[in-house]
Amino acid sequence: MHRRYLLAAIAISAALFRAAQAAPPDTQDGAQTEPLAKPHYTVSAAQLQRSVAQRFPLRYPVPGVLSLDLQVPLLRLLPEQNRVSAEMVVDAAGPALQRSHKGSFEISFALRYEASDRTLRAHQLHFKRLQFPTLQPGVVDMLNAYGPAVAQQSLLEVVLHQLRPQDLALADVMGMQPGSITVTDAGLVIGFVLKPP
Image 1 (cartoon, helix red, strand yellow):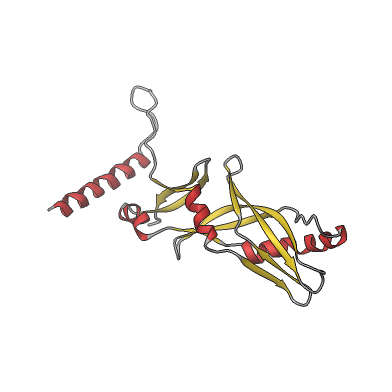
Image 2 (cartoon, rainbow, N blue to C red; image 1 turned 90 degrees about the vertical axis):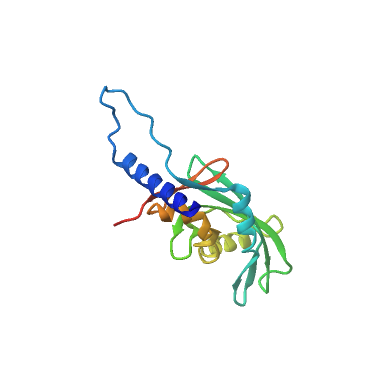
């Protein structure tokens, strides 16, 4: 019995949402109506940081020359750019270097949703310069030449978060799917859109 009421409530919610999408913005007397809040799901900054931490450290070898070990990145939300930045410590070692050196670099990226596995992924990477205080400038320049390749191979399409089936259950019943991803000060807001017919 309760299940029937729940299904009816979900169906009514879906119908109301579809009607709101189709309704004209003005009322008959010319007054503006307040837009209904669109369905969304929020991933907090803390959730995002925990998810990313599970996927590091990463190793990027340049055979016969050196290897770069990327540690867990520190994420920073950039709402004004609708992007996320990641600053990470990198350890460089190998035949080209006399000892291991610790440095850092930063990238920023946009986000996209991958429906096949319900994940949020990094894309449109912007690489910022590697910094190694203990290395000679010429060696740092060489490492910076590899920097964009390191970022592309190691971080492009890195899974930042995976949505659970229950996170999408109500949207699915309403015939909706994740659409926009908006970066806010508090986290990511995933807006839902109607599934194509």
